[in-house]
Image (tube, rainbow, N blue to C red; front, side, top):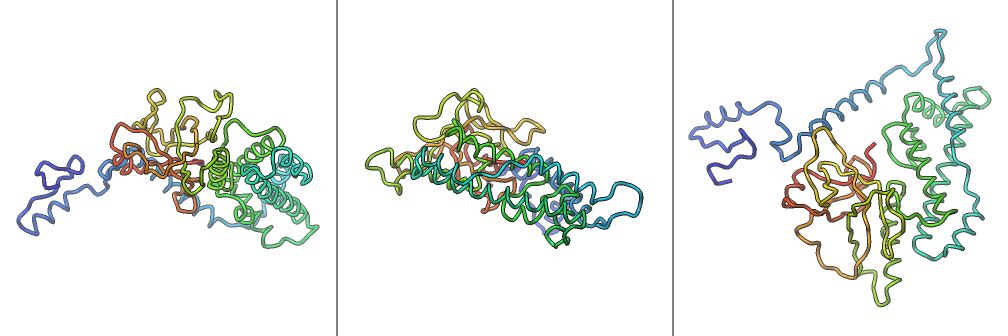
Length: 350
């Protein structure tokens, strides 16, 4: 910064002035709106900002619109919601039969860390399916006037009409921008659990589909530790390698560790040929990453400083509640470049 030719970005030089007035003039001459590049971000960051602002405005408009049914001859809110509820009930997966799940887990090895993890996930999935089924059935009865409309059912009615996730469902599940995305994710998550329980362990895992991805990675570490004699869990650390194949091209499970798919890069692109980070193409906000091989090594050595340690989040909102783990990604530029860019991996971009 002491180099006279230094600038943060074109037109963002450090002013060299003699009086306060001159400094004030320099400050006044700066652009009113800074471009993302001036802050080390990619131009695509502006698209994300505009999208988020628009979504917030629309969300506010939806929140303040009148909730009562119109007196006109058109289709009422209740009948629209009832049709949606019937449609969802028709698509809702069947309940898990406890003794069938137990028998399958015993066959696969009930004390295997991965199967213990699977049992916990299936229990949570079953709870959501039961709550959704009860809510939708009760909502239909309440609209028909058979039962009283409770506070939870009124909330479900309002939110389903606005294509948003009812609070009761959100409390026991996950965040999603619309009800459609949420329900599709419910079906996809359930599909992964069902195939794992009744058809055997998947070749690659969709990490987005887990309630507790950290638990999944810990179970994998425990599995590797048990497979190697003399290893202690405290000294075993997670490491990873990004493959060149996509999920469809994977034909077999790895000998050790797991294959994970469905992660998206936010803030950077990916060179599939050379397997390293590159700048995002213009107007492409998220880049799908190929399959990652996650495995464990018996070492507590720090990560190679040449790699960019990329955080993985469950959802686009990057909070500590959504943080999963960090993976090392190879890069030609220094890792600091991607830190400024705010590059992260997201399990879900909706």
